Length: 302
Image 1 (cartoon, rainbow, N blue to C red):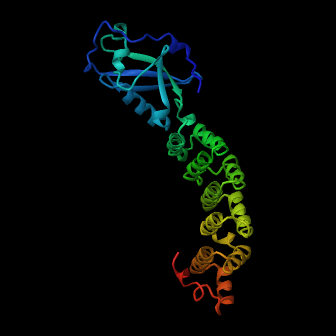
Image 2 (tube, one colour; image 1 turned 120 degrees about the vertical axis):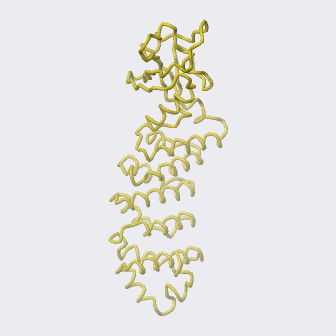
Image 3 (cartoon, rainbow, N blue to C red; image 1 turned 90 degrees about the vertical axis):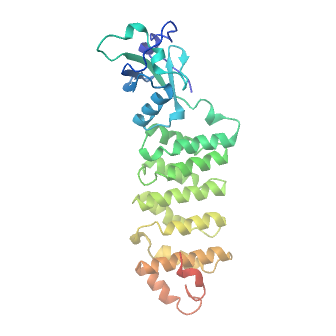
């Protein structure tokens, strides 16, 4: 990412080498200016390191600390520097808290475009930990990565958004999940279904309808996607598990894939235990073999 300097930080002094600060002198007020000109003040102890300052600021902004770069002038500050070493002697006045101004930059420092896919995936996963906080910048980055040309990056981005699907069920996020349903990679498809299931559990109408539509189109899908869709049925609100969903589950009882048949029976049995009226009617229809429980004994445990 590009780096732009604010006017206040450009004029800030670089490290003074001609004196040693008293590390027990109190606190320093650090003015952290973003590239858009917005300012946040953070107070740290005189003996604090740059890493301590970055950690405090990351907590304030709910951002991953490894994506925060601090700059004075054209110099990037290093974690093992002491913040006080960047003060000029003139900043110290009796009875007043010294003030230090610097620029903060949100930067991936190359990890999101690293040649190693493992490094890229780990960086996306780190971003995902902060998605549930609703940080718009991170959410937009993950949505962008859900369209990445690398499959493992798309999967990681969708899985990351899944962690916050209930809280972040905006149209933009749900549309990103729906777009991934058409992905050529089965793992990305399955991750998108799981994400939509979480949004459905949070009451998002578009996600609920999409899961219901998916249940009715299971026949030609890969087994992994069908597993994800069947599990998603248990995340639907009871009123959404209507006759269409239950009929689709019944059809899966005759599926060529034994694990799919077993999972469909388990889901149907769970809906019966929830007193879902459509599932209970289907249970009575199937009491004579093949029944949910006699034909699929594992259906009693989900």
